[in-house]
Length: 161
Image 1: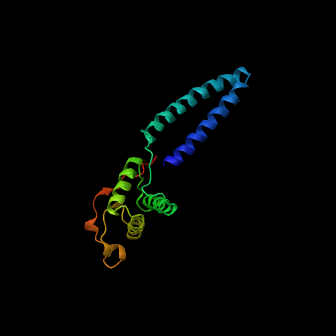
Image 2: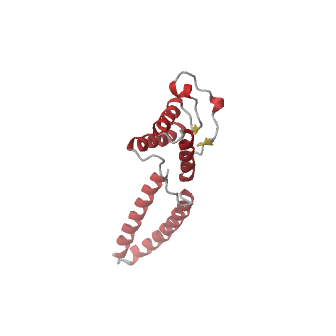
Image 3: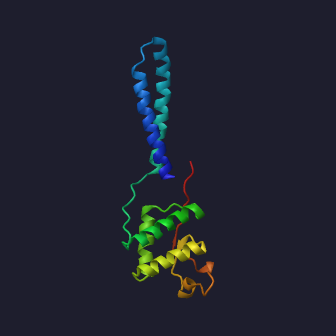
């Protein structure tokens, strides 16, 4: 929702600037009265947009630094975040993302290839949380067990307008 809100806010600001330009050139008394009423209403809309903006981004996100610097890991992590949004409607905030990446590094023993296999397993199996899968689960020799799912949960839903 945040990217859409940013697009909306940018369009809103653009309209606000154009509206101000438009009203500057008006000279007719009758039109000025109508513009005054319109401006009062518009200012209320701007106020409510600013109040809502505080809810969409109440705190500044933290900088997320990936534990592995390769482009392959970066791509699979982006894919995982998109998967969470697409399949589970779950947005991954920066603080949760940082903790998930720390945990992923821990359960992969700092091995980038293993971390990527774990992420691929979560996507392939439809999981929305991170846990340490067994080697048999990663290789496909053992079926997934939903009751093993634990640790960091990413069920925070994207807030709807």
